[in-house]
Image (cartoon, rainbow, N blue to C red; front, top):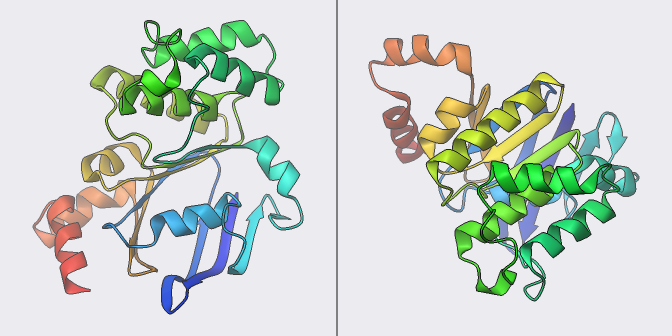
Length: 239
C-alpha cells in the first residue's frame, strides 16, 4: 500500500498539487491521467522523494518517506519521462551498474531478460548518447524493473515504445501486480490508461477530480452515453 495523505506542492505563487490524497493498494495497476500541467509529475516527484518541500505525508507500508528514504529507495522502481542515463556508458554497462547497485541475483540472466523483453538486443553495445529517445526509455524502464521492486512508478515513460515492447511491458506489470506489487502509471495516453489500469485517477489543476475502478467503466459509459475518452475531454473542459 502506498498512501499519499493531503499532499500539497507550491512553486512561488502556483499551487501545483492541492491537498491530494490517494490510497494505492498492492496487486493493482493504478493510472494517473490528466492534461499537461495537471500536477501529475509534481505529485509523483513527491512520492518518489525528488521533491522535499511539500505538505502532507507519503507512506509506504506505513513507513513515512521522510524517515525511511533508504528503505523506499531499496523497494521502489521509478521510470520518469526523461532523465540522464550516463551518456558515455553503453546500454549494457548502464544496466550492469544498476543491477550491481540493486544487488540483483543472477545479474547476467536478469539483464538479458529485460533486454529481450524490450527489444534492446541490437542496441546494448552502443553508447547511450547515440541512442534514440525510444531506446533510452527502454533502458530506463529496464533499470526500473531490475530487482522486481515492490513498488513501480512510471511517469510518462511509455511514450514512444513500439507495439511489441508495450505488450511485453503490460505482461510484466500484470505479473508483478499478481504478486502484490503496487504500480502507478501516469500518462496522457487515454487508451493506454483505460486498457491497462485497474483503477483510474483523473487529476486536473492540482486536484483529483474523479476516480474509477475498471469494472465500473463499461456501466458508466453506457449510463453517460459516451466513451471514456469523450467523457474525460468533456470533464477537463468543464473544470
